[in-house]
Length: 224
Image 1 (cartoon, rainbow, N blue to C red):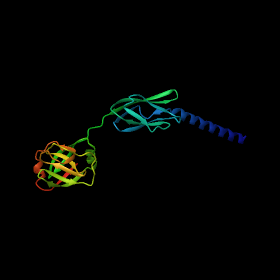
Image 2 (image 1 turned 90 degrees about the vertical axis):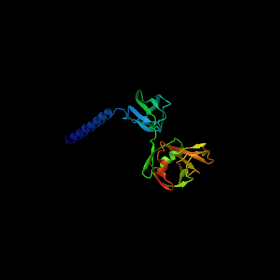
Image 3 (image 1 turned 60 degrees about the horizontal axis):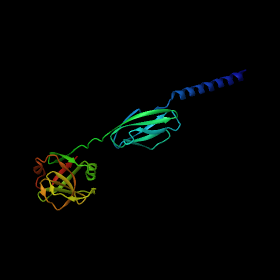
Image 4 (image 1 turned 180 degrees about the vertical axis):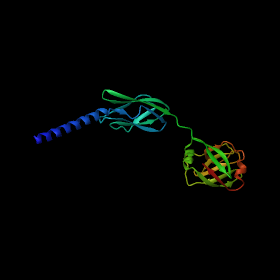
């Protein structure tokens, strides 16, 4: 009789455990990690469907030029933003489907920089060239620039800037350029018909007081 009670208790315990497991499984219904996503062009996020071990099919049902799906696993996918717009990504599990609305925003415009000489600050606006992006990656910079020709200051860096050099019919005060692939040149006077070739990085938005701030000799320049 005692043995029967032990067997019966063990049986009841197993039934309770199975019932609990069944309830847990039932409560863990498949769920999409996000119903809405906001990305900027070039960024990426992972979308996944939890509550299942079965293979999930992911597909873009609208806005196929806006994003792409990569790095697919059994239950997740990587969404990479390609261009500004909106799209819908659907996760299909058996007969059920789950939709995520994706909004892709344009990249924010790069912020202007500050160039300081002898305590006077100027706003430096870089262009979109690869060389300008390289300079931005080097910031902040503190340079002692040398005087040359009464119209420019220069500094040889240890960095080779990308891009193709060319001649400029006019070089204006405030232009920041690269000479010889690795020499930063800041002009503080206008030059017409220079025979030398440069890569343009950008320019100061205002040159009022620039010549006085740079002085006649070498000068310490801070760019940040």
